[in-house]
Length: 225
Image 1: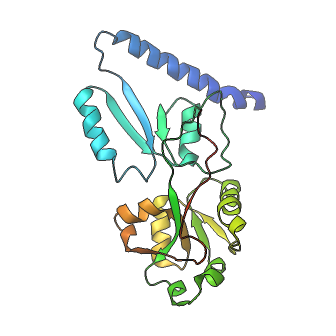
Image 2 (image 1 turned 135 degrees about the horizontal axis):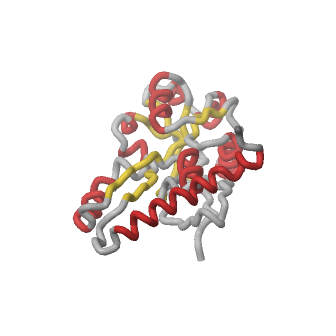
Image 3 (image 1 turned 90 degrees about the vertical axis):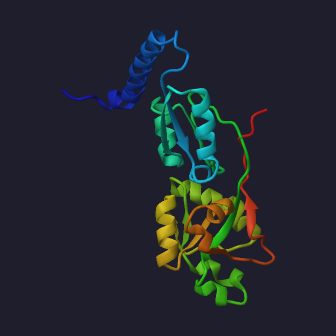
């Protein structure tokens, strides 16, 4: 026996119901204890190397018996996990144009993040007296889950300000972004805070583009009123 196409579409929702029923039974059996259960949290790479240890210590001082699971907070990971109830909540970086099922996922803006064009310190672009003219000749690394999101980001935040689109966009996660920046001439568009705090990234250098600002804030339509 195998599922029909319709069955395959609704299977994740039934898996979610089954999982939630299991958690509900576990919760009911432990309600008298108050400090129980499992908390599954998606963490963006921006937060993980900075405040996560302090938040963990604060949480553990209050809840000594709750089991914790920290998961990769990239959008490509959190979206299906949140929808299938395999993740309780996530702190993630949202790009303009990200669409979500408002019936299943609630979004609240916590903070804004500045992005920069960044390359390794000895990148040839730093030998150019006007990097603005040559930056589009290199591949751009972007840490999102789809090319639609990457293109929306480039159009809304960069191309709209007069910078030509790159010859190619490469989608990467944080680890591969660092590897590619160190070993190729690719240029990354990453949160400024990331390359200033994550080990290894501090060796990178911001590409100054006059009159274009090196740092730019993502447009964010997800503010809750």
